[in-house]
Length: 207
Image (cartoon, rainbow, N blue to C red; front, side, top):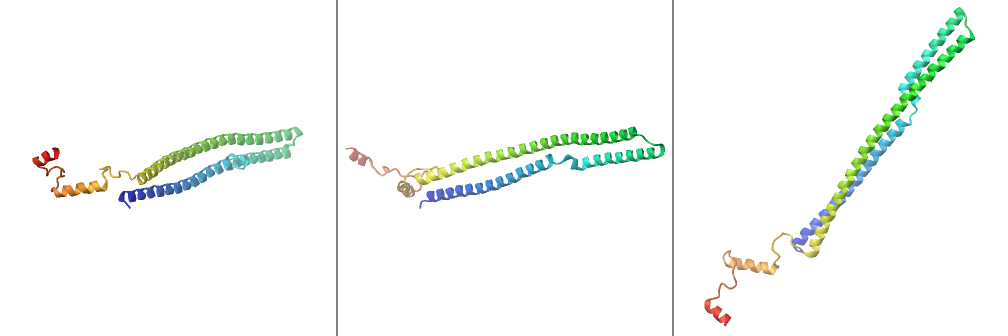
């Protein structure tokens, strides 16, 4: 097998192997991308849809409010035991307690809306970065596929056509060997096939 064909086959094998490894790397990248996307989605679902009343900050606020209500009730009960109380004073105490709890729950709801807005912003920023990264990977993959395809096509064309691999002479092997022989016989100088003709030979040749 001609050296040029061997070189072409080696080049073709290299291009195919490179394409295979690139495909493997892309599969691994796709799997990692999916893990990242799912991680972001899980975080969003967990945080955005969480019960705001079960959050630690909300629990602290509600606990403080309940403690304040209990303290108010104890004070009202003490006042009633010493001075006596009326239905109106008890109703006022209950109303104040209900209002305090409603205000606390409203504050929790307002804080929750702000928290959800922040979650949305964080999630959208993370997903934008994710999709930008995926787009960059796809662009690089397309470029690699195009380059690999060109390399395979070039190698196949050279195998099929026996093209000029060295960029040098296109002489046939017989012609190249004859030139080498002529050069060697002339001590390194390329021999002109008519160098050995004399003037008489030329006259005979032409006449």
